[in-house]
Amino acid sequence: MNRIERLFFIAFFGFFSSNVSQAQQQPNVLVFYVDDLRAELGCYGSPTAISPNIDKLASEGVQFNKAYTQQAICAPSRMSTLTGLRPETLGIYSLFTPLRKVHKDVVTLPQLFKENGYKTISIGKVYHAGNDDEQSWTHLFKRDPTDYLKPENVALIDRLKKEGKLVKGPAFEDADVEDEAYKDGRVAKNAIETLHQVKDDKFLMFVGLSKPHLPFNAPKKYWDLYDKNKFAIPSKEKPQGAYRLALTNWGELKAYYGIPQEGDLDDDLTRTLIHGYHASVSYIDAQVGKVMKTLEDLDLRKNTIIVFMSDHSYKIGEYGAWCKHSNVEIDVRVPLIISRETSHKGRKAGVISDALVENVDIFSTLVDVCGLEGPPSDGKSLVPVIDNPNMPWDTVATSVYPRGTNIMGCTATDGQWRYTEWRDAKTQEILGSELYEHKNSLLSFVNVSGNPVYKREELHMKKLLESQFPRNAKPFSQNDEPKKN
Image (cartoon, rainbow, N blue to C red; front, top):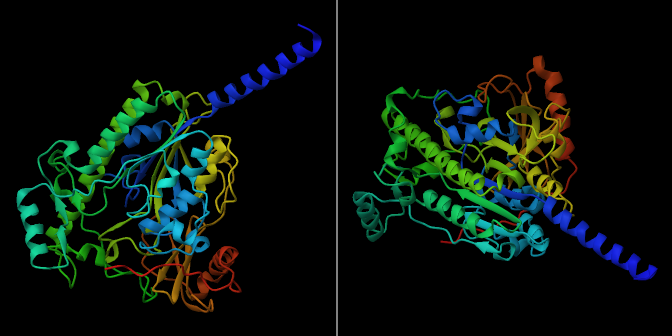
């Protein structure tokens, strides 16, 4: 072999081995994306929730205590996570607008991974219904619509349909069945089977668990974990001085059979619904455990980063209200756990971080972890704070929620105070403002905006809010389509 041939040989195989090494170093990604889950978990200090598998995952990673969604509703929050763009950037705030109809060339997280040689897998609810974005996935499991199993409920729903009544089935169910009888059990089963199929490939897998979204349907054994009568009734007191549109009349819950259309719920029904929410949490916790066990049994954990997250949070009777659809702290603060692959040097485990982080950051974080080149994003990589959870980090997290097409609620937190401005969506005129302290609680009952005692705090928060939502900005883009009947 002459000198030129030898140099070519060294260069070629050096390049080849470098590529192989890079491929081997790129981790797999497993994201548990849960619907309507508040930080009602043992690892977050809940005295009632039974969530041993999620608690175990938290003990193996970094638990973020101040993580926030960008909008407390399914479709926009999920689009934000999967594109790395905020709802106000996308101009999509409702459930009914297909992402590609408005942004046909946007590069989604799974699309980017797919283009970089990953198997990309969507199981369960990842995007909101009707927005699965098939081009982003190599494996897309169609969703299972089954919700009710008890014969009396199936018959009830059939009767309601025949009568032409626009009402959903009961808001809860506790059939004595195995996990796979309800859809989240089948989601876990599909995830386990798929892990076996892709164990020799690089993969990005989203496991979308639909509970604890309504209806609160879970196998009876998870209801049996709790004593209904031990659940406390939340205070129905509403925040004094709140903007008139700050809360909703929780129409999502009222769409279910047996829920009164007027007035507060009685204590018995309130406890039943809270019981059902907790049973649903324990049900999805068990599914997380099954998938994690398979990941470990297949020896994939050492090279797989895990993200456990919720699209937004949820009210279960607080403020005399239910569901999400607002800018209040309890609706926008979400659980977030990130556990690096066990082979990662410097991996942190069992650490709690109070850094202000956002769901929109997940895009840049996973791109960074896997060494990819991604498009511009509204978020930032959390890798520095995952590796050093106590380092100084962002000073503000923001969210939005519109009221119709004419009013936009913009909100910001610094981790202690939450400041919200309700603005004319076209002119940016301030129609109302709210300031609440949340140093020690997710709930706050007095709006102190305009109170001279808190002038300094309000000016500080106003500056933080306007850093993201300038008063001289263009009108809020509205790309939403009307609901189709």
